[in-house]
Image 1: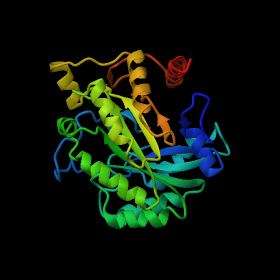
Image 2: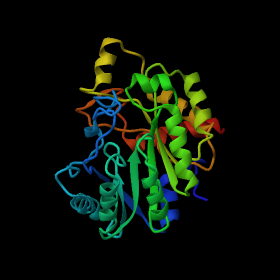
Image 3: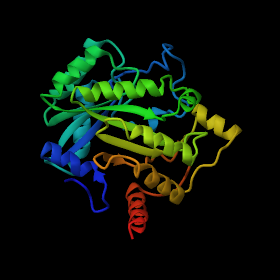
Image 4: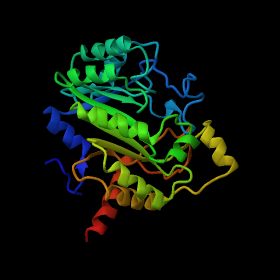
Length: 299
């Protein structure tokens, strides 16, 4: 129904089908943290992580959720005056904290004019049953996606990158969320240290059995100042060329259900923070290359 001409389900088209209108996500930083930062399971966060790589300038914790959404709307409104919006609780783990406080923030976002739904990013080990029950109710009155940072389906990798949760945590959280009728998104990084092509194909088989609705894939990026940056400097491992990465993506998604919706296949960090890989491509240029490779596979 919402497959694009390259024969995979495109997020933008799917979203318009779901909402009946064009919608733009507005990223929020609502002041959350993570259990591998505050000491509950560890310190320092994931070794690859620097939230500056994806937070827009208006995402500042001293601003309320309402203010961030209003400024985000102003940023996009000049392009699309009739645009509707999804409040995207993106930075850190947005279900980690006092449940009542979390709910107050979500409900605040839904009071902002033209906000027609929520996307809530979190970790698989940060989903209390009380919140799941709230989300099940919320899902009946607004558009909702719970987006889990999966990153890897290898426990050794998760330990190496200081993720602080297990593959079993991931599988449990996704299943419990989907069982309540809630749309579930996932986020996976391709190219983490020690993960070969064969290992990633093994992981894609595990992922395929989970009840996801949407999926984000992106390449591992070495970000300046992170612990992974230091590790890579001291003991570098090979990072794929853009063509190698595209072939990896196509192999990976060939194992996944045809019903899944792909939000993205690549990510672009700010130039001043990105160490490697430096492909020098805009997102639309990458999308063109991906489609070229995909066409060749279907010739």
